Amino acid sequence: MPMCDIPIEVVGAEKIVRIVTVSHVNPSRTKLKPRAFRSRPGYDEVSVIRHTHRDAHFCKAKALELVASSGIEYVGLAVLLVHRVRAVGSEVHDSREQFCGHAHISHGIMPGTPDEPLSPEDNLTLDKRVEALCSTAQYHKDPEPQAEHWAGAEL
Image (cartoon, rainbow, N blue to C red; front, side):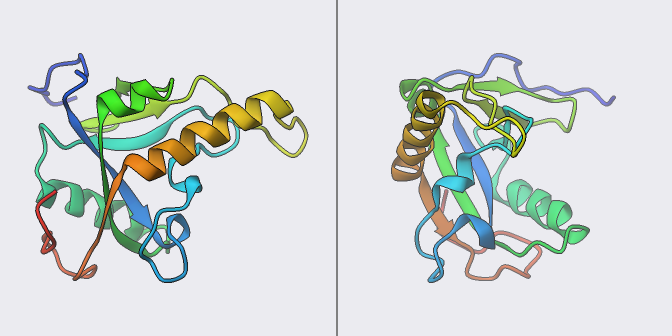
């Protein structure tokens, strides 16, 4: 693995960016849905990029790279501060194994599956956390989603 010059510790003042796809926003693409910060079944990790260490152009390039093979439509970027993630009871961990600047939000609650649904208490806790993250995140709709570089407002 190539050298990564980013500190492993993720500090509270860091900005993180979530790549936003069409399934993460309401039909008018103006507001995030809670699913933007909910893990897929069987995983307790929501991928983010450590924006404090990687600029908006890097985040956009990574978004285009990740959606290119999936057929999922990329629509923008959501920005959060790490201390706000921690304030709702979730955590942010460096996960540079994927790429330098990658991190995960972990809620401490593994999402249920059709065979093993979450308990009502865990489901309510998880719902509250992801809704709180949606309300604190700044969603930036990409004005040029097909463009190679970020052309939107400063993150």
